[in-house]
Amino acid sequence: MPEIVECAKLPHDLPSNEEAHATTRLGLATGPKKPELTRAFGPLGYDCRGESGTFTLRRRTANNLTVELELDVGTWSNAISAHFQVQALVGGVGMGALLVLPVAKRAMAGGQYPIGDAEGWRKIVENLAALVAELDKSFVPAVEAAAGPHPNGTNRSPRPANESLQKSGFSARGKPIHSSGIMIDRVVGADVFRPAE
Image (cartoon, rainbow, N blue to C red; front, side, top):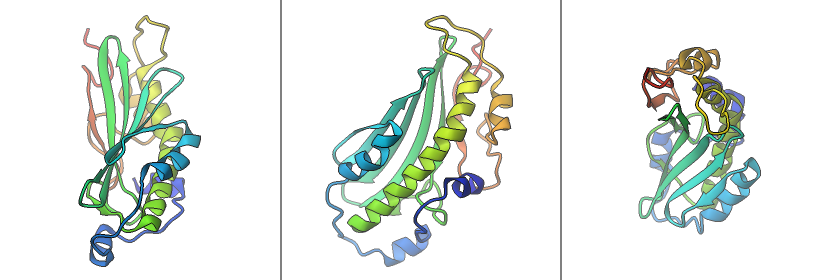
């Protein structure tokens, strides 16, 4: 994951989870969260659903894969966790790849990160937008290549998932290629992306 975060060139150097928890005052108001999400992710082709607690940002690829960013912002905790998922139907079998995202270079993926005030929310959203833009250029095409072309309603055998994903630096079996950071938590389907014979 460090390589992906480096490529994304996150605009804000936010503190680690531990530092953020120690320095963020409880009860800070962020105001409405959706406008900032729409501003940052709309230009990337994502729609935004949700009003409080959770938000789902979604788009479709040219090959009809669904790409989603799920954000849990809590209703009272004012902390965020983020998950990026690519889903497809391959040979009648559903498959998906799920990544747990950090909100900053020094923040660990998977933990809740304190949002703080409206300025903190803006910085987190801008970092996530930069990371998602990088994943849209690297990870999503790797999953599309593994899933194979969408042949207008008929199913074809996809290319082997391990080959396509590993060429892009990702693992298809729930084991990270990189020693730390983003990891594919789950890939569903017989023989990873290939339907059972």
